[in-house]
Amino acid sequence: MNDHTKSSINRRNFLQTASVAAMGAAAWTGCAKLKPSSRRRAPAVLKGRIKQSVVHWCFEMFGEKWNIEKTCQVAKELGCQSVELVAAEHYPVLVRHGLTCAICQINMNPDPPFLKGFNNPDHWPKLLQVTRDAIDAAAAYKFPNVICFTGYAAKNPNDPNSPKIPPDEGARNCVEGLKKIVGYAEQKGVTLCMEILNSRDTSDPMKGHPGYQGDHTDYCIDIIKRVGSPRLKLLFDVYHVQIMDGDIIRRLRDYREYIGHVHTAGNPGRCELDHKQEINYVAVMNALVEIGYTGYVGQEFIPTREPYQGLWEAVRLCDV
Image (cartoon, rainbow, N blue to C red; front, side):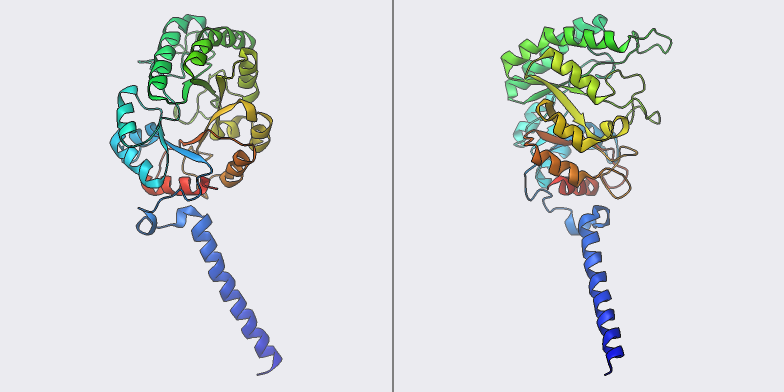
Protein backbone atom coordinates (compact mmCIF):
# COMPACT_ATOMS: atom_id res chain seq x y z
CA MET A 1 0.00 0.00 0.00
CA ASN A 2 1.59 3.29 -1.06
CA ASP A 3 1.56 6.53 0.95
CA HIS A 4 -1.14 8.04 -1.26
CA THR A 5 -3.47 5.06 -0.65
CA LYS A 6 -2.83 5.17 3.11
CA SER A 7 -3.56 8.88 3.12
CA SER A 8 -6.85 8.37 1.26
CA ILE A 9 -7.96 5.63 3.68
CA ASN A 10 -7.01 7.67 6.74
CA ARG A 11 -8.86 10.68 5.36
CA ARG A 12 -11.93 8.54 4.60
CA ASN A 13 -11.87 7.03 8.10
CA PHE A 14 -11.52 10.47 9.64
CA LEU A 15 -14.44 11.84 7.66
CA GLN A 16 -16.61 8.84 8.53
CA THR A 17 -15.75 9.20 12.22
CA ALA A 18 -16.35 12.94 12.12
CA SER A 19 -19.67 12.40 10.36
CA VAL A 20 -20.83 9.94 13.01
CA ALA A 21 -19.72 12.30 15.78
CA ALA A 22 -21.50 15.21 14.15
CA MET A 23 -24.68 13.19 13.81
CA GLY A 24 -24.46 12.26 17.47
CA ALA A 25 -23.95 15.86 18.50
CA ALA A 26 -26.87 16.98 16.33
CA ALA A 27 -29.12 14.38 17.92
CA TRP A 28 -28.15 15.67 21.36
CA THR A 29 -27.94 19.43 20.92
CA GLY A 30 -30.44 19.79 18.10
CA CYS A 31 -33.33 18.65 20.25
CA ALA A 32 -35.84 18.81 17.39
CA LYS A 33 -34.14 15.74 15.89
CA LEU A 34 -35.05 13.49 18.83
CA LYS A 35 -37.76 10.94 18.21
CA PRO A 36 -40.65 10.90 20.72
CA SER A 37 -40.47 7.12 20.90
CA SER A 38 -36.85 7.16 22.07
CA ARG A 39 -37.12 9.83 24.75
CA ARG A 40 -40.78 10.21 25.49
CA ARG A 41 -40.84 8.81 29.03
CA ALA A 42 -37.27 9.58 30.06
CA PRO A 43 -36.86 12.41 32.58
CA ALA A 44 -35.62 15.57 30.90
CA VAL A 45 -34.04 16.99 34.07
CA LEU A 46 -30.74 15.30 34.93
CA LYS A 47 -28.69 18.07 36.58
CA GLY A 48 -31.34 20.17 38.27
CA ARG A 49 -29.27 23.34 38.69
CA ILE A 50 -32.14 25.24 37.07
CA LYS A 51 -35.52 24.74 38.75
CA GLN A 52 -38.04 24.39 35.96
CA SER A 53 -41.77 24.99 35.71
CA VAL A 54 -44.45 24.36 33.08
CA VAL A 55 -46.71 27.30 32.23
CA HIS A 56 -50.15 25.70 32.05
CA TRP A 57 -51.97 28.10 29.70
CA CYS A 58 -49.68 27.31 26.75
CA PHE A 59 -50.57 23.62 26.85
CA GLU A 60 -54.16 24.18 27.91
CA MET A 61 -54.96 26.47 24.96
CA PHE A 62 -52.80 24.99 22.19
CA GLY A 63 -51.78 21.64 20.79
CA GLU A 64 -53.50 18.74 22.51
CA LYS A 65 -55.06 21.12 25.08
CA TRP A 66 -53.97 19.41 28.26
CA ASN A 67 -56.10 19.79 31.37
CA ILE A 68 -54.44 20.54 34.70
CA GLU A 69 -54.16 16.86 35.60
CA LYS A 70 -52.33 16.07 32.36
CA THR A 71 -50.02 19.06 32.73
CA CYS A 72 -49.07 17.99 36.25
CA GLN A 73 -48.42 14.42 35.13
CA VAL A 74 -46.14 15.60 32.34
CA ALA A 75 -44.29 18.03 34.62
CA LYS A 76 -43.56 15.22 37.07
CA GLU A 77 -42.41 12.85 34.33
CA LEU A 78 -40.02 15.44 32.94
CA GLY A 79 -38.57 16.28 36.35
CA CYS A 80 -40.06 19.78 36.67
CA GLN A 81 -40.95 21.06 40.12
CA SER A 82 -43.82 23.40 39.27
CA VAL A 83 -46.87 24.09 37.14
CA GLU A 84 -47.61 27.81 37.12
CA LEU A 85 -50.14 30.50 36.24
CA VAL A 86 -53.08 28.28 37.09
CA ALA A 87 -56.37 29.17 38.76
CA ALA A 88 -56.32 28.91 42.55
CA GLU A 89 -58.97 26.19 42.41
CA HIS A 90 -56.31 23.90 40.90
CA TYR A 91 -53.74 24.37 43.69
CA PRO A 92 -54.82 21.16 45.49
CA VAL A 93 -54.11 19.23 42.27
CA LEU A 94 -50.56 20.59 42.19
CA VAL A 95 -50.01 19.66 45.82
CA ARG A 96 -51.34 16.15 45.21
CA HIS A 97 -48.71 15.73 42.50
CA GLY A 98 -45.97 17.07 44.77
CA LEU A 99 -45.61 20.28 42.74
CA THR A 100 -45.47 23.94 43.61
CA CYS A 101 -46.85 26.92 41.67
CA ALA A 102 -43.77 29.00 40.91
CA ILE A 103 -45.82 32.11 40.14
CA CYS A 104 -49.52 32.64 40.82
CA GLN A 105 -52.04 34.33 38.57
CA ILE A 106 -54.37 37.22 39.40
CA ASN A 107 -58.01 37.12 38.33
CA MET A 108 -59.05 40.25 36.40
CA ASN A 109 -61.94 38.52 34.59
CA PRO A 110 -63.37 39.28 32.12
CA ASP A 111 -60.16 41.10 31.11
CA PRO A 112 -56.77 39.44 30.63
CA PRO A 113 -54.65 40.10 33.74
CA PHE A 114 -52.05 42.16 31.85
CA LEU A 115 -54.57 44.61 30.33
CA LYS A 116 -55.42 46.77 33.35
CA GLY A 117 -52.46 47.32 35.62
CA PHE A 118 -50.99 49.63 38.22
CA ASN A 119 -50.25 52.47 35.77
CA ASN A 120 -53.91 53.56 35.91
CA PRO A 121 -55.42 54.47 39.31
CA ASP A 122 -58.91 53.79 37.90
CA HIS A 123 -58.05 50.07 38.04
CA TRP A 124 -56.63 50.07 41.56
CA PRO A 125 -59.77 49.14 43.54
CA LYS A 126 -60.28 45.84 41.71
CA LEU A 127 -56.58 45.26 41.07
CA LEU A 128 -55.56 45.67 44.69
CA GLN A 129 -58.30 43.28 45.80
CA VAL A 130 -57.47 40.52 43.33
CA THR A 131 -53.74 40.90 44.05
CA ARG A 132 -54.44 40.61 47.78
CA ASP A 133 -56.53 37.50 47.10
CA ALA A 134 -53.71 35.99 45.04
CA ILE A 135 -51.19 36.77 47.78
CA ASP A 136 -53.43 35.10 50.36
CA ALA A 137 -53.80 31.97 48.22
CA ALA A 138 -50.05 31.82 47.52
CA ALA A 139 -49.21 32.24 51.19
CA ALA A 140 -51.70 29.54 52.22
CA TYR A 141 -49.95 27.02 49.95
CA LYS A 142 -46.46 28.44 50.51
CA PHE A 143 -46.10 29.36 46.84
CA PRO A 144 -43.41 32.00 46.30
CA ASN A 145 -44.63 34.56 43.75
CA VAL A 146 -47.63 36.46 42.39
CA ILE A 147 -47.56 38.11 38.98
CA CYS A 148 -48.27 41.81 38.39
CA PHE A 149 -48.27 44.18 35.41
CA THR A 150 -47.91 47.84 34.50
CA GLY A 151 -50.98 47.60 32.26
CA TYR A 152 -51.65 49.22 28.90
CA ALA A 153 -50.93 52.89 28.24
CA ALA A 154 -54.46 53.67 27.09
CA LYS A 155 -56.69 54.98 29.89
CA ASN A 156 -59.35 52.64 28.53
CA PRO A 157 -57.42 49.75 26.93
CA ASN A 158 -60.63 48.42 25.38
CA ASP A 159 -61.02 51.64 23.35
CA PRO A 160 -58.40 52.21 20.62
CA ASN A 161 -59.16 55.95 20.67
CA SER A 162 -58.73 56.33 24.42
CA PRO A 163 -56.18 58.96 25.53
CA LYS A 164 -52.78 57.60 26.54
CA ILE A 165 -51.09 57.74 29.91
CA PRO A 166 -47.61 59.27 29.42
CA PRO A 167 -44.75 56.92 30.38
CA ASP A 168 -43.53 59.05 33.29
CA GLU A 169 -47.05 59.35 34.70
CA GLY A 170 -47.60 55.61 34.24
CA ALA A 171 -44.39 54.87 36.13
CA ARG A 172 -45.37 57.21 39.00
CA ASN A 173 -48.77 55.56 39.20
CA CYS A 174 -47.18 52.10 39.27
CA VAL A 175 -44.91 53.12 42.11
CA GLU A 176 -47.77 54.59 44.12
CA GLY A 177 -50.13 51.69 43.42
CA LEU A 178 -47.59 48.98 44.15
CA LYS A 179 -46.66 50.64 47.42
CA LYS A 180 -50.27 50.13 48.49
CA ILE A 181 -49.94 46.33 48.24
CA VAL A 182 -46.26 45.42 48.54
CA GLY A 183 -46.33 45.82 52.32
CA TYR A 184 -49.02 43.13 52.46
CA ALA A 185 -46.85 40.89 50.29
CA GLU A 186 -43.99 41.45 52.74
CA GLN A 187 -46.19 40.40 55.65
CA LYS A 188 -47.24 37.22 53.86
CA GLY A 189 -43.75 36.33 52.60
CA VAL A 190 -44.82 36.45 48.93
CA THR A 191 -42.98 38.26 46.13
CA LEU A 192 -44.75 40.29 43.45
CA CYS A 193 -43.11 39.89 40.04
CA MET A 194 -43.75 42.57 37.42
CA GLU A 195 -43.59 41.21 33.88
CA ILE A 196 -42.08 42.96 30.90
CA LEU A 197 -44.12 42.26 27.73
CA ASN A 198 -43.19 43.12 24.17
CA SER A 199 -45.28 45.69 22.30
CA ARG A 200 -43.66 45.03 18.92
CA ASP A 201 -45.19 41.75 17.72
CA THR A 202 -48.60 42.51 16.26
CA SER A 203 -49.21 39.07 14.75
CA ASP A 204 -51.17 37.53 17.62
CA PRO A 205 -52.43 38.73 21.03
CA MET A 206 -50.56 35.87 22.73
CA LYS A 207 -47.26 36.73 21.03
CA GLY A 208 -47.17 40.49 21.49
CA HIS A 209 -49.00 43.25 23.34
CA PRO A 210 -49.05 46.53 21.38
CA GLY A 211 -49.87 49.29 23.83
CA TYR A 212 -48.43 47.63 26.95
CA GLN A 213 -46.56 50.29 28.92
CA GLY A 214 -43.94 48.16 30.67
CA ASP A 215 -42.36 47.03 27.42
CA HIS A 216 -38.71 47.75 28.25
CA THR A 217 -36.54 46.21 30.94
CA ASP A 218 -35.10 49.49 32.18
CA TYR A 219 -38.58 51.01 32.56
CA CYS A 220 -39.74 48.13 34.75
CA ILE A 221 -36.51 48.06 36.75
CA ASP A 222 -36.84 51.78 37.47
CA ILE A 223 -40.32 51.21 38.93
CA ILE A 224 -39.08 48.31 41.04
CA LYS A 225 -36.17 50.34 42.40
CA ARG A 226 -38.45 53.26 43.29
CA VAL A 227 -40.86 50.99 45.17
CA GLY A 228 -37.83 49.76 47.07
CA SER A 229 -39.09 46.49 48.49
CA PRO A 230 -37.39 43.09 48.41
CA ARG A 231 -40.87 41.68 47.72
CA LEU A 232 -41.16 43.36 44.32
CA LYS A 233 -39.02 41.93 41.53
CA LEU A 234 -38.95 41.54 37.75
CA LEU A 235 -40.45 38.70 35.78
CA PHE A 236 -37.67 38.49 33.20
CA ASP A 237 -39.33 36.97 30.14
CA VAL A 238 -36.43 36.13 27.83
CA TYR A 239 -38.68 36.07 24.75
CA HIS A 240 -40.13 39.54 25.40
CA VAL A 241 -36.77 41.03 26.44
CA GLN A 242 -35.13 39.68 23.29
CA ILE A 243 -37.73 41.39 21.09
CA MET A 244 -37.65 44.76 22.86
CA ASP A 245 -34.12 45.10 24.22
CA GLY A 246 -31.83 42.18 23.42
CA ASP A 247 -28.48 41.96 25.22
CA ILE A 248 -30.02 39.33 27.46
CA ILE A 249 -27.00 38.02 29.34
CA ARG A 250 -25.68 41.49 30.18
CA ARG A 251 -29.12 42.45 31.49
CA LEU A 252 -29.29 39.31 33.62
CA ARG A 253 -25.94 40.21 35.15
CA ASP A 254 -26.77 43.89 35.63
CA TYR A 255 -30.17 43.25 37.22
CA ARG A 256 -29.46 40.00 39.05
CA GLU A 257 -30.74 41.26 42.39
CA TYR A 258 -34.08 42.32 40.88
CA ILE A 259 -34.98 39.14 38.98
CA GLY A 260 -37.69 37.11 40.69
CA HIS A 261 -38.84 34.77 37.93
CA VAL A 262 -37.87 33.84 34.35
CA HIS A 263 -39.92 32.77 31.33
CA THR A 264 -38.77 31.17 28.07
CA ALA A 265 -40.02 30.90 24.49
CA GLY A 266 -38.39 30.83 21.09
CA ASN A 267 -38.11 33.99 19.03
CA PRO A 268 -39.56 34.67 16.54
CA GLY A 269 -42.96 33.10 17.01
CA ARG A 270 -43.05 32.29 20.73
CA CYS A 271 -42.59 28.65 19.76
CA GLU A 272 -40.36 25.76 20.82
CA LEU A 273 -36.76 26.31 21.90
CA ASP A 274 -35.42 24.60 18.79
CA HIS A 275 -33.12 25.30 15.84
CA LYS A 276 -35.72 27.54 14.17
CA GLN A 277 -35.35 30.32 16.74
CA GLU A 278 -32.53 32.72 17.57
CA ILE A 279 -32.04 32.70 21.36
CA ASN A 280 -29.11 30.71 22.77
CA TYR A 281 -30.90 29.24 25.77
CA VAL A 282 -27.92 27.16 26.90
CA ALA A 283 -25.90 30.37 27.29
CA VAL A 284 -28.83 32.12 29.01
CA MET A 285 -29.28 29.27 31.50
CA ASN A 286 -25.56 29.17 32.21
CA ALA A 287 -25.70 32.91 32.89
CA LEU A 288 -28.50 32.33 35.41
CA VAL A 289 -26.35 29.75 37.17
CA GLU A 290 -23.40 32.15 37.08
CA ILE A 291 -25.32 35.00 38.75
CA GLY A 292 -26.62 32.69 41.47
CA TYR A 293 -30.26 32.78 40.40
CA THR A 294 -32.28 30.43 42.61
CA GLY A 295 -35.80 31.08 41.30
CA TYR A 296 -37.75 29.16 38.70
CA VAL A 297 -37.63 29.11 34.91
CA GLY A 298 -41.10 28.70 33.40
CA GLN A 299 -41.44 27.10 29.96
CA GLU A 300 -43.95 29.45 28.29
CA PHE A 301 -43.78 28.63 24.60
CA ILE A 302 -46.73 27.91 22.32
CA PRO A 303 -46.44 24.36 20.95
CA THR A 304 -46.54 24.04 17.17
CA ARG A 305 -45.91 20.28 17.05
CA GLU A 306 -46.24 17.32 19.40
CA PRO A 307 -46.32 19.18 22.73
CA TYR A 308 -44.80 16.50 24.97
CA GLN A 309 -41.74 16.18 22.77
CA GLY A 310 -41.33 19.94 22.38
CA LEU A 311 -41.54 20.39 26.13
CA TRP A 312 -39.12 17.53 26.79
CA GLU A 313 -36.62 19.15 24.44
CA ALA A 314 -37.00 22.59 26.05
CA VAL A 315 -36.61 21.24 29.58
CA ARG A 316 -33.53 19.18 28.62
CA LEU A 317 -32.00 22.16 26.79
CA CYS A 318 -32.37 24.37 29.88
CA ASP A 319 -30.99 21.70 32.22
CA VAL A 320 -27.41 23.00 32.11
